[in-house]
Image (cartoon, rainbow, N blue to C red):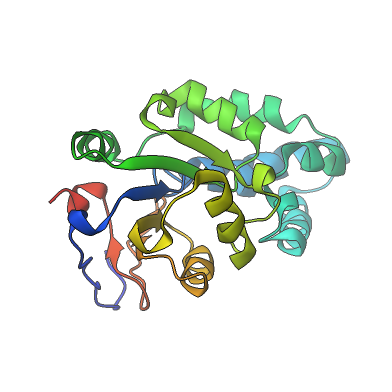
Length: 226
C-alpha cells in the first residue's frame, strides 16, 4: 500500500558524506510502540484513574499533546508524569515488548561502519525513553555519539537545533546526511543547509508507506546500501 506520491529516489554518493545523523523513533525503531503507547495505552490508564471513558480520555490527551508538539515538553517523560499524575517511565516498561528495530537497520549500521562514516543518533526522545529503548534494542554500541534534544536545549524542529548540534559534534554540514521520519525536522535541517536529507516513509509497521513530496524517501535502509 502506497500513497499516490511518487518516490523521490535518494541521489548521492557515499564519497560525498562524512557524517550520518539518524533519528530514533520511526526511523530506526518501529513507531508503532510510540503510537500505541501515547494514543491507546496512556489514555486507557488515564481513563481508569480519572473515571472517564477511554474515548473521553483520548480526546483530552490528544488536545494536551498538540499543545506542546514540536517542543521539548512533548517528549519530556517527567513533564507528562507530573501533568497526568502517572508514572510514565514505568508504564513504558510495561509494554516495552513492542519496542522493535526496523528491518535492515543493523545491516545499514554495519555498512556505515565498514565504509568509515561518523554515525550519531540524534533524537528528540527524553533521556529516560532513550535508556528504556537502548536497553531493549542494544543499538547503542553502533554510534559514535548519542545526542538528545534536551542536551541541545531545542527540539529538532527548530533550525537553531542544528547550529547548536554542529557545535557539539563538530561536523561539516555540507558533508552530512540526516535520515528522519518527520518532514518538519527535515525542513528545519534544510533551512540550516544540511547536505543530504532522507525521509523515512514508513515509520510504523502498522501504517502504509507515505512518500514525501519534498525529500528523497526510503521505506527501509537497505535502499541506502550502495
